[in-house]
Amino acid sequence: MNLLMVIFGLVAIFGVIGIFQSIKEKNLLAAAFNALAAGVFGWFVIMTVLNQGYPPTH
Image (cartoon, rainbow, N blue to C red):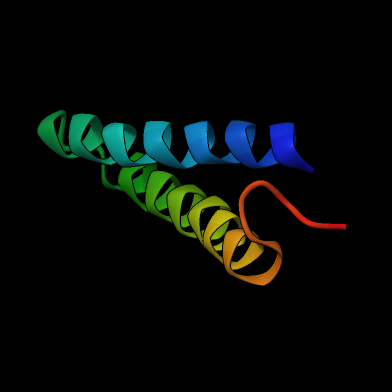
C-alpha cells in the first residue's frame, strides 16, 4: 500500500498540473476530467494517510 499511495499521489499532482494546462488551452472537458482524477486520487491518498498513517501500520 505504501508504493500505491506514492503512485496515486503523483497521479493527483499531475492531474492538478493538467488542470492548469487544459484551462490555458481552453479545453474545458479535459479540465473537468483532470479535476475529477485529481480529486479522487488525492482524496484516496489523504484518507489512507489519515487512516493508516505514514508509513502504514499493520
